[in-house]
Image 1 (tube, rainbow, N blue to C red):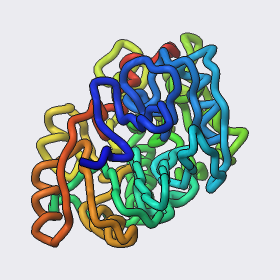
Image 2: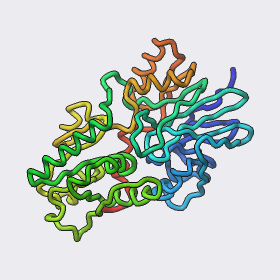
Image 3: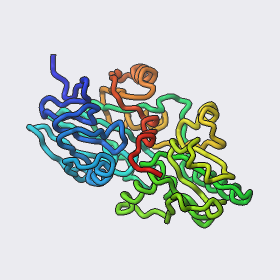
Image 4: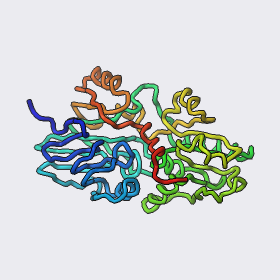
Length: 340
């Protein structure tokens, strides 16, 4: 039986021919990293390879590591296997990883979305024989509203809160979601204040993308100056002592999970905005079709339901267990080294 080009083992996704791992979850000698979120970029590997725009991100998060960066579509060979990175559109520096050997092509998406958010380099479909896809939101119930409309709703919410004399506290993951929100906030309404974890990450990314001005909240920041303005904070800040400085405030969360009313209630959030950095149901299906692939491997999310649907559509589809966690993984802000 032919050995597959990529195999799943206890450490991650392994290319035996090149002796290299893709987004491994246990320490390995050489790792190709799709993007900077904690479930895909972990500490402990001897050598990291990633897109050049992701280099400062993972250095910020992982510390002193040996890492090399490559450009989009730049081919590099390891033991005769050809690799290249292609835009995934998930967050800044997020890549699909293309693997080719003797004419056979596999593509690993990492996490991805097809909507151009104005921050990350937009997703580009890559032709392949086997497509390894996430399906974080692989249910027909997930259908995203266009970003422009969601951001208009967020800005209107902020304006109403300001008119009511209340501070707007908007929760979003410190890498990716926070910068996407910041990029499209209407700063004519007021100032944007940030939790330390978000401010630190945004500082790293300002060399790549132009963002509005922000003000870090410190112990010296007075409640009176924050009132009526916007505060961007990671989900871990909700319910903490840190947030008491914002009183009176109104909370909101920007996430694909806000599709479900129960998610907002469980998190004790006043308002939910459906804004995800992953594909919705239709985005997943269209992406798979555009690759012209024959085989699909579903790695995290609604894998069983989604792969069953794909088989009904004629694909050779199956699931694989990984330690990737989709949008829930970005709660890594709980473990951020940066303090408020």
